[in-house]
Length: 519
Image 1 (cartoon, helix red, strand yellow):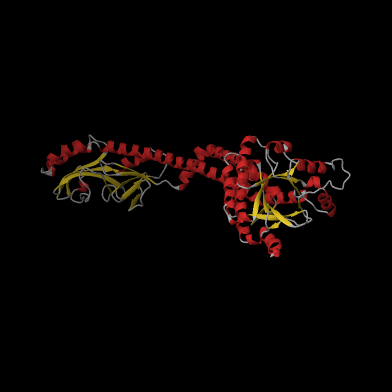
Image 2: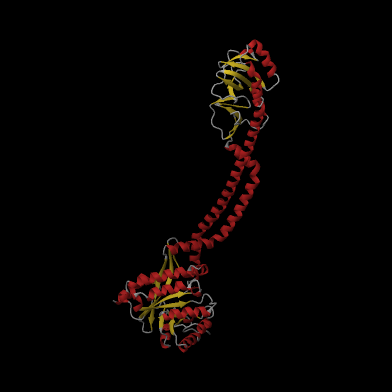
């Protein structure tokens, strides 16, 4: 029986309210997810681009310094012949050499790791060769004699304590760093000493996150990129792109929101199917003498959030999505399982009715229906009762030949077929003409005409007459009054179903109320 319109509206609104949070949840997740993903790519790209730019600059500094140090090999080779000579005869020769190379501070002869002769006599006998550094590699040390407190560079070639030492004024390095012009965060490091373009010395500095190392001279040019540097780079170079991503995210989120209601409903229905929330309700079917002769199984959705949901609300979506097929399979299995426990109490000739639609006869769905019926036929329950499949008229049949073939298979198995809600749906007469039914079920809308002055009242007589001429058993649905019952008995209607005898109730309650009472 159709759900009253006010209950349908109330239930539908309840579902919409329950689902609304899911719609916004999915839309928000889509919007935020896409924005985070897109922005994440931009952030990574920005960091990589920033790092690449800085590393290129550091590399440029390294190459410049290597260029400055390139002449040290030549200078050392020119000075080596004077290692064993006296300083008196050597010093002027050293001066003549060093003045040809403006970048260098001093040129020195080393004996026993001490400067014994220099172009700057102030460091003779007081300056020591930097230890722990290989020959021809750059050492950075803090000056204590020539320019106290400032750095100087040193490159040596000393073997067994004797050799040549060249020093480079720290200002050479400062000027190179200052030419970068845009940051105080570029430093030069050798061993454990690091200094910046202002000459500030850091002993044992923390490890830098951007570094370029000279393999030839063993020094590094470094920089520490802070989060604020990355943020400023993003703001400066990627703001428009991020705004574009935000707009795209909002558009996609809006699209998801508009489509989320249907998807959310389907998701809940799939979850409920997995949780076995679609339960069988049973309504008694009586013979003309008022004796129990069968039942019709009606599906109800007992959802943990929505409560009891009537089929008028969810069946259209179940049919449109194809979920009606697994729902029917599950409903039949649950029904057979419950009735099997009381099969000895079921009266002979008892029939069990299930609603099916034209969708069940689609080629991809036929096997599911036939398999469910085969399970029943092969069970002991089959000896006491027979199954009646009630074909609704909500959907048209496109291929009668294929449907007839399934009808024939089901009939051979002993399954009965009924046309449900006769006269209310698609192509009623076409159904009767092309398919072999066993029952006609007269819809409640026609039963309500009994005893009325409506022009359409004679239709009930016509339907009954048609069924008799076709030799079909008749089931009257929606019988609620004594007047309707008396009329139907007078016209030899075979079976009565409706609130006059009982409303649909959970199958287990039906078993207790009708079947256990008969024992």
